[in-house]
Amino acid sequence: MAKRVGMEVSIAASEAVKLADVDVIAAYPITPQTHIVEHLSEVVADGELDAAFVPVESEHSAMSCCLGSSAAGARTFTATSSQGLALMHEILFIAPAMRLPIVMVVANRALSGPISIWNDHSDIMAEQDIAWIQTFAENGQEVFDLVLHAFRVAEDSKVLLPVIVNLDGFTLSHVIEPIEILDKAEVDKYLPPYKPKVRLDPRKPVSMGLVGIPEIYTEAKKATDEVLINSKKIVLKAWKEFGDLFGRYYNPVESYKTEGAEVILITMGSISETAMTAIDKMREKGLPVGLVRFRLWKPFPAPEFKKAIAGAQTLAVVDRALSPGGACGPVAEEIKAALYAERGRPKVFNFIAGLGGRDVTVENFEEIVSKAFAYAKKRPKQFYEMIGVREI
Amino acid sequence: MAKIDAVMGWKELDLGCVIRQPGSSRAFKTGDWRSQRPVVDRDKCIKCGLCWVYCPDLAMVPAEDGYYAVSLDYCKGCGICAKECPKDAITMVLEED
Ligand code: SF4
Ligand code: SF4
Image (cartoon, rainbow over all chains, first blue to last red; front, side, top):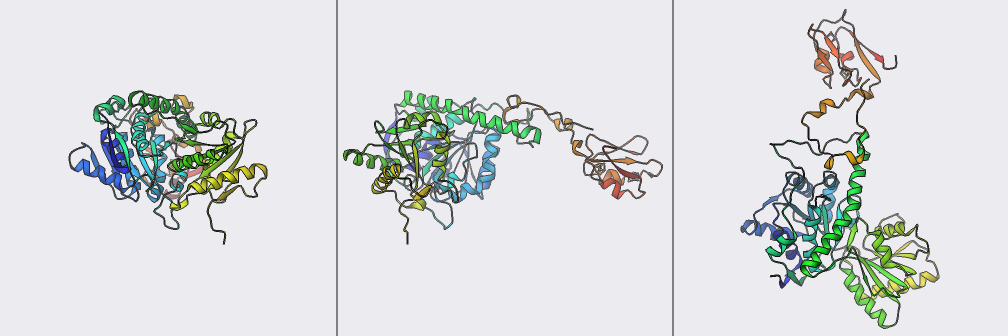
């Protein structure tokens, strides 16, 4: 039976990995992901999990090792953050191209410089085009559930793509929350053993990761893009089955008090909970505001998003990463592109907040919403603005 | 001139572009972007084999009579053989000639 316990979210993430009975973990510790891999190395050393824990010398090696073990047919997990994710960069693209269902938790943290160990989304937003399925967790329970969901989706024979579960560094990774931990029998019901369609096997040799000559590269890219786009069906199906089994249902896009909302806040990750508190407060004052947040980020759930914001005149998109010299932040950019062809599309205003561990408060959200109302009447001069930046 | 026979559509590609047949790279003719090809003058050739040694693509193939023949499926036309031949027995000629 599932047990509800007070647990640090990082430990809950690694408990999910343990329950998924992974075969290989290759990881390099980096703040704020450290507790996840420390705990996993402990459970392996203590004999609680029969897996190979490979203490690699860098994240570049971690991801390379994951490619190898996943190609050999092993259920494979890693976790990283910020500079570590950046160091994996070149290998990240290869995993989906080789259709390797690796699962990775990214404890989101700002990229240097200046050096920052604190939370924002600049690490993952620099990896937008890696063709991994990506989800964002809002709280500890979601982290636990999304990790199991990630294995289930990644290894589905119609998907076979790697999955990243994003969780906010410190604000999620290091907090203790009441989390319902499923037991092994429950997890086994949800997550069947991984059956690779093709794997490295000396008895039946194959070659993987070969050169893509100009005559093939375009087709190879198209094939990966198609499978990523179509993976959404399985993402949804796996959430539905999770809900049917355990009572927690998840959607790619979640709405909060959007009925009759003129302005809708758009968020991702843990700040969404603060945003809900802000929405409650503003609704009490009679302001027609609501919240929409992404749980699924890639493949971008455009139809679900459009449905969620239907009727709103103004969107206030909160980005937790800057796209320097660009038109706006990465989330706003995706949204604007998705809405461009829509008739009667809402106005989209973009606010950059919570960079490098700066708290995003209820007051910040109130400021963002009141600015969005004002800008809807009188267009602002800049495409995006940074909330809370000291203009001196 | 060798042609790359790779006209598969994206739906036909194997999972992750995996290759299931060992040694299939032999079927991949790499010589199609050559602009010049080496021509061996057997009257000058002393069968020393330096062209075979230096060719970076193993495109100089020893023939039974001791001479060396160019495999145009793989020769990329770099001209190294012509440069290294001690007897100037190899001339590079333009492909269109
Ligand atoms: S290098 Fe010149 S001389 Fe020697 S085998 Fe080749 S063609 Fe003949
Ligand atoms: S031209 Fe270059 S590739 Fe062709 S046979 Fe000579 S050395 Fe080999």
